[in-house]
Length: 192
Image (cartoon, rainbow, N blue to C red):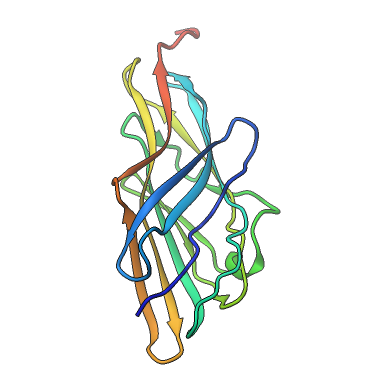
């Protein structure tokens, strides 16, 4: 069964944002699906400092496929840098961004260096959605001169089709994990 679906998409974000587009390999659906996200993170951060990362989304455009009822349970896994540590409890959804059809029941969690966003709500066939924007903090722990990269690991969803019911669709970047943005760890210059 072939399914056409829109990934969490972003083409514009705050000033200084880098737009990334990862080619996906999916268990179902046509070849050439892409994951788009706009990432804002500093180009450099002193060792020991805390810095913010922002992931922005915009409208998916119309999701439409013959026989599709809706999609739901979209899950995105972001791999956090080896050169940085997640600041516990810092992940937040940015208020006022995202549509009701994906915000209901939204969950953010962090485990073992992976930040996971789950959007369980339904997006009906023929409609569109805007994913929420997320902000979190990292502490630069890498050696000066190393890069801390935020990457895309997986994007999964469930499609509900007329005849077969729920069908899981698992996607991962063709180049995995796919780097979305990097921060150079620099020498700490503040008071000791």
